[in-house]
Length: 103
Image (tube, rainbow, N blue to C red; front, side, top):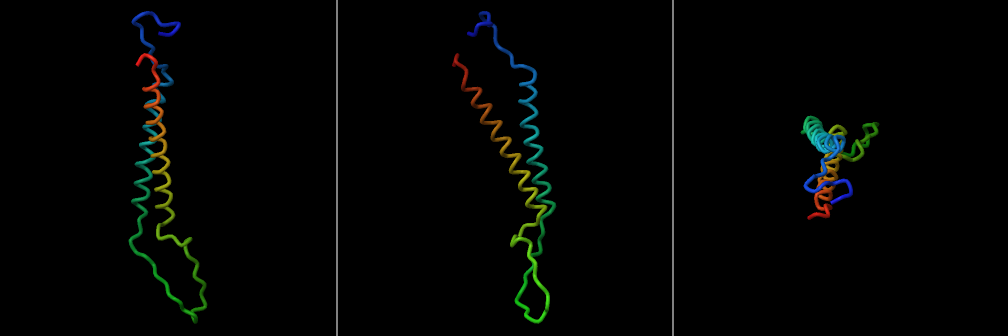
């Protein structure tokens, strides 16, 4: 028991902590869903192939050597950030739960 606890009284979390416990995983889940939607909507099914053409007088400029479009890369990055937020929140929640001296 702490200094301010009366026998049988339990500490209730502060409203800001309760709000953060709801908002952080919700934002992480929204980021994951938005990233998956953006990545899924930007999928390109046709792959462009090129060959050596010495007489065409055109310079080939590739898209950074990637078969994935920029929109798909952005969507996957946003989904990855959302997953990192969810993993951080889960680790923090598990750590708080295990740090009580009464247990």
